[in-house]
Length: 380
Ligand SMILES: [Mg+2]
Image 1 (tube, rainbow, N blue to C red):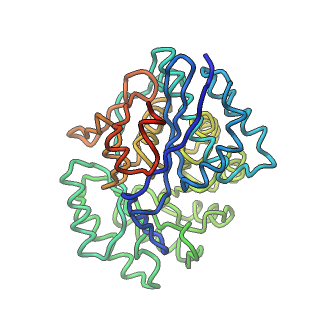
Image 2: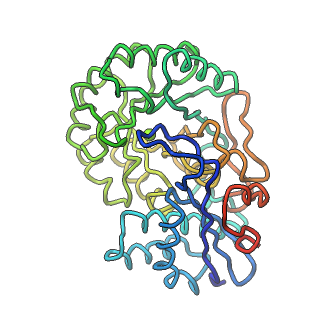
Image 3: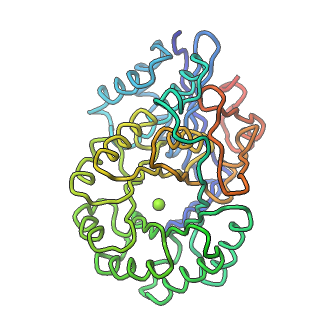
């Protein structure tokens, strides 16, 4: 079975806010899908956390290495792409785009074998996983309202991130925001805090992070994410040694090699590679296994699409300590691009898809309302 085509579908028109200091507008393109087709009529779908134009440019370089390849060997084909791209932008857009290709190839591999990806990864530790609602920080009044809303929607874990937190040089405001979120979420809900240190010109350093971690302990915060600039491995190590709250991060890194110093230096408690950036499922497995060997938990960053969420669910099934997936609150790219949608169980859990491959089906009409690409031509 051979790969006959690889195309991209850039998503735009309904892009959710990211809390970035240069805020994402609905019409901005930050996520793209990858569609791979085979000579026996199969189709696989992947997701890339990158602008549509950049993904298409990367595909122009990658396509000659993909079309004509065997369709049922995702890890080998992805590794071939990494190996041929050292001089062509590996680590950035090219690696992000390989992620989408790799996820689509795993989707096809599952369809060929009749198995869900989770089983192909070696076995399932769970059939359901807790979804945490990933929402933006707001000023205290609205923060309480927002966290209460998601609690009432059925979530038993909520992560608040970015927005005003740490950006007003006012530790009392930071505490009021977290206090409001805890009040809205209730005492029986997991609460995580994401400072968003990968924001442009993140103003805070190690002392702020240590003081803030102490404050978060008082609100029973489950992890503290991106408390420092994303490249600052040594300060992360110091923070991890001093923080009473587990330290999470590494959502910006790509390629397994970038994670090695973070693991070797014991700079992190929870590592959060993004399957739509890091190199796909094949690369994410290797990072998760390395982390596991160092006693570091792997819980993927999932601020992307329904396709990324499906990949995260299969990966969560395959790793013993990965008991959360990230679910963006209010993103049509997660909620509306599949025919089945997502149903949260009463206890805040999502089921791991059991159908072959990723186990999801694209809703072509919904997808067409979110892209300028010709969905019928690409998806068929
Ligand atoms: Mg984050």
